[in-house]
Length: 114
Length: 115
Image (tube, rainbow over all chains, first blue to last red; front, side, top):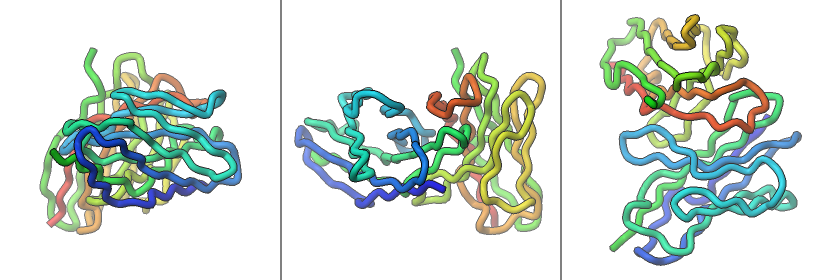
């Protein structure tokens, strides 16, 4: 079985500052890794995903994430945040044999302050 | 093209009642999955259906059931509602079943409140 830990439940940051949202996972098999964003009263939108290949993955809205197998981490970064980035961010893993069974972390609430 | 659509968007039910939630996947998508998101937590996998067959089931009681229709739309049914079933129920669709690296697209969810 897989599990996901998001170490920070809330991250406040000033506008135009950089941000890193941390994600660690546990799995005995190879997994695919995802970051989703959820704006208030909306569903989840895919930011980026790691399937294989380059460990640095670029996504939408200027976000990127780096897969680190030895540290079982998949941290999300953005060099300069905007007010509109305020949302809940979820890290998720999926094992190749599990179809669409995504295991989500508890989420990190990013609040961008003016 | 329309995204994943869910209905109803909000509903209130009484303990012990039954609820049916509906989902229409993106056109051409044959896989539908259901997730429960309790306030303040990440979504939890309930079911996945592909080509009208159940492909996966999460750790939920038998009160939860689902089905997929020939047009690939899906229903989630919950019997004997408990207060703890209050949550946002998310439906997601994708083109294919495996490999799981395919992107799944979420609808905006159905908010269920059990009183």
